[in-house]
Length: 103
Image (tube, rainbow, N blue to C red; front, side, top):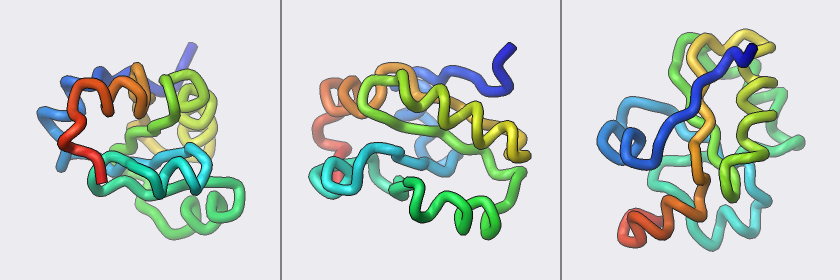
């Protein structure tokens, strides 16, 4: 059983300010375009992210197409984050549906 939930692109778009977005794609892909407000989370900054953030803040994990984000969501949930979502379709689908909402 997963300790995280799937979130649709539409749900995220309609409530963008509701969640903290963590983008686990490689830094270069992140720099080339990400969802507004997202931070890039990787192996180099994961521990400091865990140490510095409130476990009660709802998190949405973003990857390329929605597969890798599931593992990252599981990890964040297992270390204590209470509300974790994996973005279904990932950045690829976000860019297709909301090309004007990419930083």
